[in-house]
Structures are given as structure tokens and as C-alpha cells.
Amino acid sequence: MVKSYYNAPALDKGLDIIELLALSAEPLTQAQIASHLNKTVNEIYRMLNTLKQRGYLEFNEKTDQYHLSYKLLTLVSSFSPIKTLIEKALPAMREITTKTNHSIHLSIYTAGKLLVIAQQDSPSAFNYHVAVGATFDLLETSSGRVLLTFQTEQERKRRLDRRKLFMKISKERNVTKTKIKEIEKQYTKKTIHKIKKDGCEIVKSLQIEGVTNISYPIYDNSCYAIAALTTPFIRRLYEKTSVKDTSETLKFYSIKLSKELGYVC
Image (cartoon, rainbow, N blue to C red; front, side, top):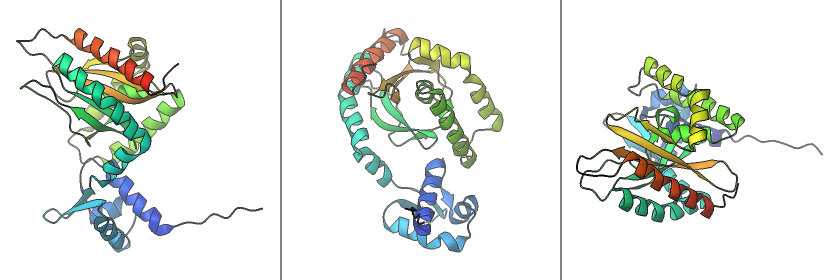
């Protein structure tokens, strides 16, 4: 029996728009969206309006730009595996912030980039945190590098290839080509070996001066990293908590959380 395959052009068009805006670090105009998708403005007009009416897109009348709403993040958070991950991680994250006096966030890989899906503030009055829903270049963050490292070589390559598309579409970001190349050069086989050996990455932030990122992988029964637990460590003059102390706390809870998610490898 010969299988028949059918296309749904309208659905393809809508998904193309959503994926494009998900990869873009900046809002895009109708003309920019059409150009990226090799479509005419008229071809995407109705779909943009439909996505806006359904709550998936938001439109800024002052700039004539579209960006994704939080509806997709809500759907992702409701997706059973992600929902379970967040529900199990939040209690541990609250305990970590209490013990370390530093904020912490949980990130996952999606569509060529890093996505923050949960965050817990430090109880300290001096607080630095990363917002839920924020997206970053995989190689620009310790969370992203940890998520890349603890994968199969084939999956790592696939994600890096997907990242290239994200960086191409995100060219509006204030990151020069030279800076991007510098970041890429830092993720070498030697770096991968060190992260694997240490079981984490502790490194000065490439984005914020004075911040040391401490990032540990979270595993499930697949035996590969499904998320990264990261503390942006800031040295406070009146505190005795060190990078080493904070790292040990994250290590303990990352192992505990991984076991709760079925990690037995």
C-alpha cells in the first residue's frame, strides 16, 4: 500500500513565522519576516493577523514589529515533562538560594538556543537574576555549554548547527562577528573534556563583569542532560560564602534532582 503525504501550506506558514520569531533575539517587522521566509508581505499578512488574534504574537504599533507572546512559554511550561521538571526543581532551587544567598535559574535547550524556564531570587538585598523566558546563545553561557557537553557527539553537532541558524537570524543583536568568533573559539575539545571531567562549568561570565557562573547538568533516565542549574555568583564583601561552597551546594542538589527524574546511569 502506497502511503499518501499531504501538505498544509497555511500551517507551514504559521509554524515558519513562529519558529523565525522564536529564533530571533529582536522583534521583527512584517517586511523583515517576509524577507527571512522568502515570502511577499501579502503572503504572510493574514497569518500574522491570525497568530496575533490567537494570542501567539504581540504587535507594537509604534515600531510596527512583531514578537512572540508568553502564550508559547505557558504551553511549554504545561507540557508534562517540562512541568514535572519545574515542579521538582523549584523546591530544590529555593533551598539552594537559602543556603548560598545567591539567585539561581533553570534552563533548557530549544530551537538552537538556551531558554530560561524557572528562576529563584536570592534572599539578599543585593540580587542579580536572569528572567524566566529569556533566551541566550548556547555558547555565550555556561548553562548552554553544559547542556551541549553532556550530549552524544551527534546531538551536540545537531544543536550547534541549529545554533548557527539562530545566530544568523539574530544578527540584529549587539554582538559583533568578531565577538561571536571569539566565543566559538572558546568551546573546544579541550573545553568539552574539562567540563566532562569536572562535571560542571565554573567560569567568569561572558556577559556581565564581576559574575562567575556555576552551572551543573540535570539528567533524566536518558542519561543525558535535559537542563542546567546555574548560579550567577557575585562576591559580596561582607559574606563568607565562596564559589567552592556554592558549587558544592549546586552539585548536591543537581544529583538529587537528577535521581528524582530517573537518572540511574
